[in-house]
Length: 498
Ligand code: HEM
Image (tube, rainbow, N blue to C red):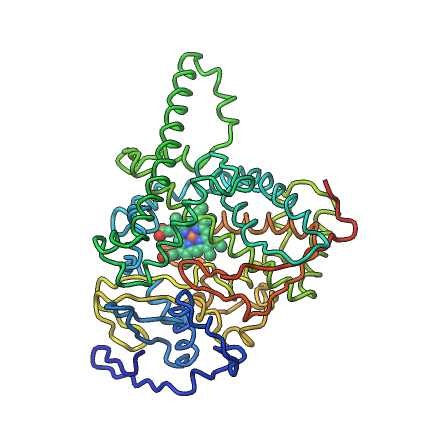
């Protein structure tokens, strides 16, 4: 708990009053609910409380163990950091990702990051993403079949079903490997990915687990080591197989004097294929270790984020039948009650669904906060913040600024109609971050979300079965409902079934 902070001569007097009974922060304030203070929620809840209470200050400072953290949730302050090409170094908390992801695109800094970003950006080109739509349709239709068995039945938790589908999509698009997570959630690799993200989040908020030597004395540290081995072995094996395949293809092409070119070019490409052939400005290729960093980064950043986002959309639609009806109307116009695969043209036409996806990411940004370490002194909203400070952009609170989004807790996709977004501060809404270190997977994510949601909502009517306070929301690396997302499904009239 902090009460008084000095930032380079500027005194910020903070008086904490009545916070504990603030109904905006604690639902049903008079009820005795110990789960409000489960460790998973504690840090995030504090951030929510303080940003709400100190909204007019535009920033505040708190301590995470020995680490001073300045928290930003006002568009002008956020702009100073995100718009800068100097403040691109990730905070200390990202160091716990290094054993798994090394210093790939998400975690690297300086020249290494610049060169990688330049090399990898073309792999997210529209034309390449369009090939991935096929994977999204295939995996999405498996998901829809799995959901069929819940029609007109008891409420069920849809969170894992959607996550496994997103995991299958990223495995196939990143590595060209079908791990069949939707059919076998207990595979070693799938379980290791899952456990690893949890272990990292737990370590980030437990300062006593920070030193490597100490960590290894805890069972979590040993579990981390075991999972790391599974994850790296898997990626290493896939990279080696792909590299051999590529070599083989080159050889065949050479032997056949180019005759097999056509069949090769028709094969579906994965990010990994592109990483194996990309070069930097000097013509150097990435080493296997470099490639592993990037593939692991896509695996980590590319499925939990989209899975959480899609789950939140279903939760919100299930509570807002009027909005859901509008989504259905649009889907019926575009698909005319057919069950064909979703095309890029369809995606362009699904404008209302796009606003729904955006509004859900406003209320429940999959990445609710992200941090930087300042490498030089910096002036934010009139305060001098010294070099070395960790700065946390709290999108969760930024997106709830009532001056910019009136009635911020209300789910209103119309906020994102072009006429309503005109003139909005460009840093008021940044679910994918912004500036030079924004999310490279944004278009991939939007494509996946819209495709899967179209496949699901074309066929089903969704009802949400949880009150907001029953979600037990945990804001860590990813904003997740700890209790899952419980929904009921009904088949829509005229919807086909396979
Ligand atoms: C709804 C889905 C997603 C959301 C909300 C999201 C959000 C973000 C945010 C906020 C950042 C900045 C993090 C920071 O500065 O620490 C980021 C970075 C990144 N994201 Fe995403 N992301 C999503 C999906 C994806 C997908 C699908 C991929 C890959 C296929 C991806 C790959 C990355 C990478 C590689 C970075 C680091 C970029 C860099 O620093 O140059 N993301 N994402």
